[in-house]
Length: 264
Image (cartoon, rainbow, N blue to C red; front, side, top):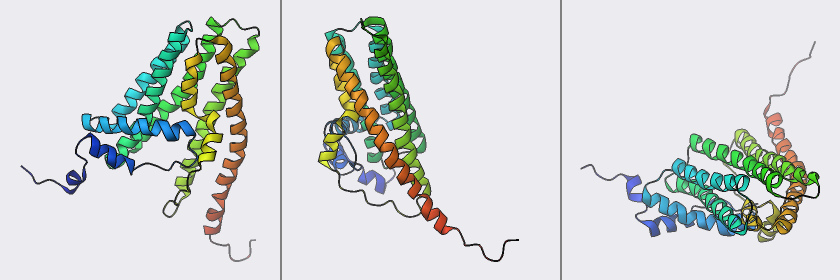
């Protein structure tokens, strides 16, 4: 039998040890909305520890997340809204979101993620964001007795806003990582007030809102308000993100050697 390696010795043994290790291996909470920060990450931590003990890989946890999420999405599009359906959809989406947090935490617990894992995670996220609001559009068209067809523009607009917001955040981070020449700056301390102010953009809050799916007169305005909040946030955030990305050009321009001689 071979002697244990340093990595084997450092590996947590058991659920409680894994949970303790995860508590000190969390990514920055800067900018995270309240549900994602205070609820989903804690649920994900428990699921990550359980997945670690079960011997699952981060990609397998991503697949479990997708199964729950897309089951909930299919129920929205295919089943006539009812109170029981809202509870089932909410449960499926909430569990799927918790596993979505767990895959990254499990990767950090195992010593770091992979490029292929990050790619898979982002592809699943991109698919669910568009599919979720498209399912609401189908549900409203099939089952809701809408006074005006213009209401169908709400889930259509939500699809566009959610997809653009996700792409903008991912692209901004990728550009910053590609242009970074030194170590990553230390993240700023998270703000609880900001976490509460950006609650309308919280995917977890959207998941919980589907509890109201069977109550048409309530779900329609709540979903519309969430759409309005996301649209306003995207307008403001896009300007801020553009300035941050533009700031990446200054160090690159300063690093270019100055031209010498006379241009003919």
